[in-house]
Image (tube, rainbow, N blue to C red; front, side, top):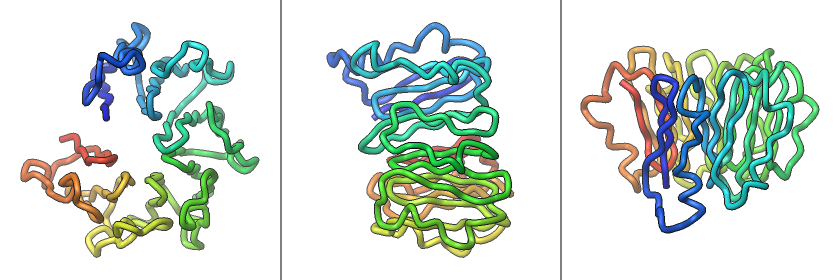
Length: 246
C-alpha cells in the first residue's frame, strides 16, 4: 500500500513499500520530470501517473515496455484517473473525450466526446456535460447499471470497489455493491455536499461547511474521524483508508 502526494508541483511517494522488491523500487523512484510543475496525480496498482503541461507521465510496473503511453496522452490532457482493481489501467481526459491506457474493456463511443469528469477503480465512470453518468468495465453487482436519477443533473462522480457515487443537487447518489453498507447514504450526506470519494469498503462526503461524513465498513478505522478534521476540510480521498486536506 502506498500514497502519492502533490505539493508545490512536486510528486512524493510514501507508504508500505518493500524496497527489496525490484518492482516496488521502480514505483518508489519518482521520475525527475514529475518533480516540478505537476498539476494532478493518480495511482493504478503498481503504476503511478502525473500530469504536467498537459502530458501524462507514468512510472512503476515491472518493465519499461509496460510504460508506453498512447501518443495522444502526451499533450492536451486535462484530467487523469487510475484504476486500482484487479486490472490496473489509466483514464485520461482530452478535448472532452476519454483515452484509456492498459484497459481491457474498450471505452464506449458515448464517452469519447462531451465528457467533463472521469473516475476509475475496477470499473470506470465518465460524466457527460449534460450531467449524465456513463460506466464500463467489470460488471460487479450491478455497478454498471446507472440508476435513473444519475442520468441527468450530476455534477461529480467517484468510482469505488464495485460501487459508484455521484453528486446531484448537493446529495449523494450510490449504486452497485452494498456488501459493507457503502450505498446506505446517511441523512447528513443528502444535502449541502460539495465533494465525494468512493473507497474500497467505505464512502466519504464533504459538506459545504467543511465537515467530513464517512459511512460503511470500519475495519481500518475509516469512520473514526479525528477532531481536527471535523471542520475546515478542503479536500477528501478514500481508499483502504480515508484522508482529508485541511
